[in-house]
Image (cartoon, rainbow, N blue to C red):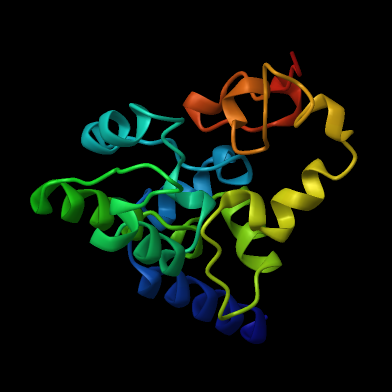
Length: 178
């Protein structure tokens, strides 16, 4: 019985020492069934507006911090996958801070944890579609349903098939390929 108490106290001490997280407190995470689902939704209005003006405002939990650092620097924004996404420095810093604070390795959500587990320690993909976990989740979908489909075009167009992508839900139950 004494051994059980020591193990329990050690576990509780470890949890308390973790502190809080950008998404929620450890206690909220432990008591919530949502921790097993999806990815944290985008809650920063500037991020939603700036990134969402051209494409889905991808939840930061879909990429590690190193990826966000590469994507949100001045040079990368000047040539953002062939387009200019330049921002004033204050806005750029706000978006970068938001993305870094909510990146995959800092998440308690299920998908970001799986994303991080699929990446090597030094990997920092620039595209969500380069992540092994994401590729694996889509490997059984025939190319003609994505690339050959004018209504979809590529895997980067998550919201074309994942009907709840804007709410950070990428669950199989929300998929409808047009």
